[in-house]
Length: 136
Image 1 (cartoon, one colour):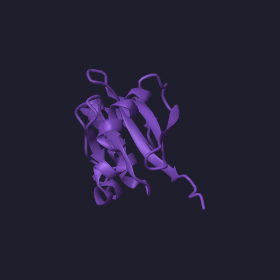
Image 2 (cartoon, rainbow, N blue to C red; image 1 turned 90 degrees about the horizontal axis):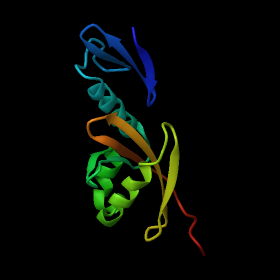
Image 3 (tube, rainbow, N blue to C red; image 1 turned 135 degrees about the horizontal axis):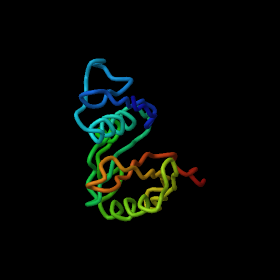
């Protein structure tokens, strides 16, 4: 049996596919490893108490969490920065992160590169770390 940790969860290989722990449906089996990884990447974003999203290689926000849904995608990461942010993830090793400053908004983002499906390459997991202190 294959078992490994991934973004705060565990993926187990079973006869007919892959199980993910924790999962709201304990009997759920994903047919492909990439489906199991995608579930955990979405879960990682969705459980954060900070704005977070997954950016793909075309600069699209492939997933946004509830905070970004409320604030708006363009407010979180304006379109003109998305491809540059994605490019930052390309050289990162697993579990390595880099920070990115949105100077126009005085916000700091953390970028993590993640390969979910080798056919498509990496995606960038992005979350807001903080806003810079306001100068008085």
